[in-house]
Length: 438
Image (tube, rainbow, N blue to C red):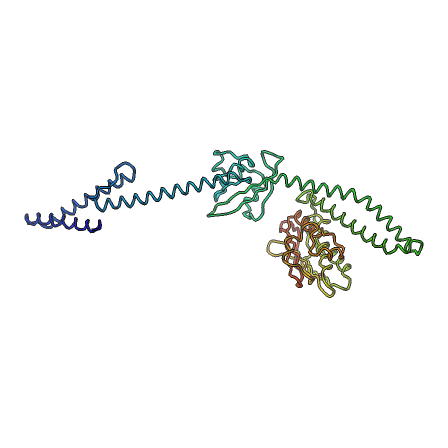
């Protein structure tokens, strides 16, 4: 018989006995009430015993005569044991997680929704100079006070990492990135990029120094080649050398252009932001770039433009000119005869967007992510035939970054390409309605 059946028969027997005894006295109703009161008091007492046992201040209700209460106690005990097993398993998993994260070379900091430190590993202690447990619960911006990180934290856009100098070690460069996860929690990942930046600086110094050292002998060589070619074209003794001398002049010209691009890149690398910013008449600059592109294209390619007038941008004129000269010249080079290159400058939301669109041969999708790498070519032979150095888009990317702008590229094979430069609104000093200058 189940505990509930026994409990039912127990209640029925109690009420029958109490009612029978009260019936002899002529008050059966009072007898039933008295029986129910006794039954209720007994169960309240057992409930009190159960509460004391759960609080750890009483014995377990394991008397078989208690029936239903003994069954309740047994169920509670089974739940308690399952909970203890689950807790031990979770504790083991947590210990394994802490051991693995402690062994990571990258620093890891768990942040709450209000950017307070919940937990950090040993690498974070070493890289950021954090202290355990004193820094737990601290607002992270109180411990990483670099303005760039505070702006990054407040901005809420964590798609890219930022780099800062470690406060406790000025010789160390750190890369920080926040990764949202779970419910309103964030993970701050810290990497030591000191070695990479030193190697990068060595590379930049080498390129700059080599370019400067090569510039003078190349200029001398180019001058002699030019002189010899002038004499050869005069039908003198050097006449048979016209073709090889012309090829030498072409190649020295390419080398001079390559050195010029390398020097420009080195200058752009000197600082992430252009310091000497001045108002630039961007409308006039873009029109001049369009005119230069028309001279390059001749009658083969049509150059069209729509530019905001007036448009004044805070920046460096020479760097901005190199951006649009490179984009337009590339568009002209890779657009077949009869095609069109279209430049458009206007506002989209809070951004100034300047797009160069062509009807050229297009670029395969697998090449798009690497187009702005130095010396990267979709087709090396084709690029050299066009007289390119492989540095044009790298210059474009670096120059735009120094103006807080971004470059995005869209292209499909046989469908042309679109190079879009996006400038933040706070860099624009003047701009009005769109007007045609084509």
